[in-house]
Length: 109
Image 1 (cartoon, one colour):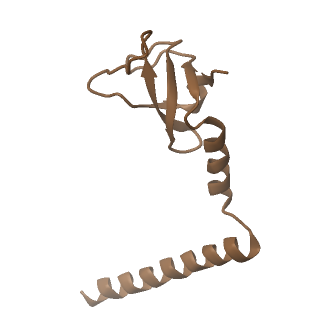
Image 2: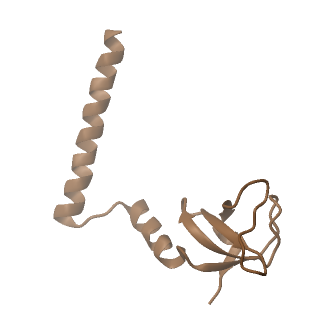
Image 3: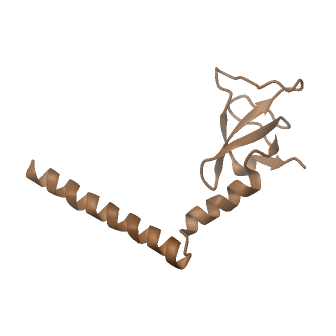
């Protein structure tokens, strides 16, 4: 029991020091985490933009469907919603938000 508590204390101290180090690095020196900066760049480019699918997906979505990006998960995947020809949200298997790859759609200008 004492070993578990000791591991939690050491782990908690490590997380606190790492968080403090990252905060100081960002605030004082302007150095940002590379992954966070890359994700922010992707979000700025595609978040809430209109998209069109370029390929058929296994969940029933067809190529050419229009939608919008709702959230960027990581540099390869996003959550998006899609619309029918009348502009209503498409619902497949009680889902209205779908996870798709970034390479499976293109932006609509």
